[in-house]
Amino acid sequence: MFNDRLRCKLVRLFKMEELMLATPGGVKAVEFSKRLGVNRRTVYRDIDVLCEIGVPIWQDGARFGIHGSYKIPDYRNQVMERLDGVYARILAAIRQLPAVCDGSEGLSYAGGYGE
Image 1 (cartoon, rainbow, N blue to C red):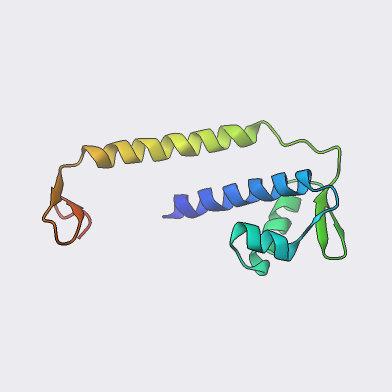
Image 2 (image 1 turned 90 degrees about the vertical axis):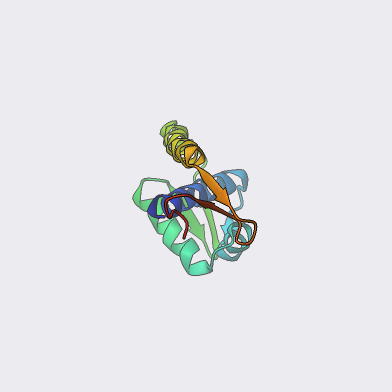
């Protein structure tokens, strides 16, 4: 569960970077909120995180953007590839568990998993 929340946050931070880079005039917090499906407080916290890790964010009134010289770092793709690898291994392990389906409650796993 923790890894899922972490992955969601990383994906959201990466999307915020991409949105700001693709929108030279900046993006309003309310726009981030609508596009990313989070509340505005989360948007402001995420902007703080991006600033803390060195993303050069500017603010003009209600709009946020990234200075033009900034490029998305290569390590970002490596982080996502590693997380995807972990998820793939977990899913493969789950699929190897013997499945039991009685038709009334959907799929569960023998040995008590999912009860």
